[in-house]
Length: 277
Image 1 (cartoon, rainbow, N blue to C red):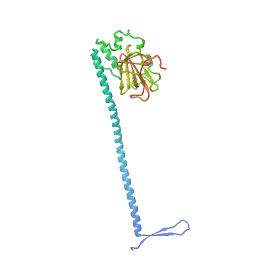
Image 2 (tube, rainbow, N blue to C red):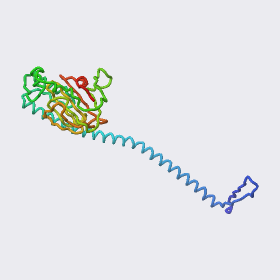
Image 3 (tube, one colour):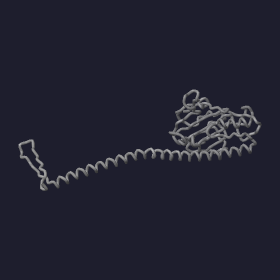
């Protein structure tokens, strides 16, 4: 009994000779054991691979969350820098208003012309002089002290209109209080009229921004510049280069964002501009 084994018979389809192989009991046991171990190994590998795949699926959302937190941290850092600049600008404006005897609590905001004109209007209504501002000088004389050079109708850059002026009432999308003019990056940006630079610095939304007050009562805004040539307090003339066109701030391509405000309300620049070649 101990010598018994198994005989493996191979019968070919052709007429060739039948072959027999005798396998001892020890060999058969070894072969069966090998097959069992191989099956167990494959099963364990499959289970481990499944477990690793499940862990990877759980880790991916965490990686996405980390990336979002890193992006948020970067944005918060930029916003913090912007807030610091705005606070510095606010202090400068308050100091300037204090020196001019203006007690209005409003300050000039760099991202819109509404607050600037409103603050000046309030100061004039309260009888406080503001001799450093060409706007107050013009309005104190009821608009009789300005010329055509004080009206912002000079094209600020040679280019093409890629986005027009429209209000929220006219469209279902948010209002666009200006025009976007596409041109070659580095093209000179010109002042649309004679005026006083109220703000010239970097902002989160419009990048390098210039805000100019004009004696005619208008305020012009120039955003997304590459380089600024002027500073707050500078007086500029119509057609004078004030910056180089760029892609700074929240912008997807080189262009100039150009706004004009009058009496706290946005004005379509195309109504005033003579032409844009």
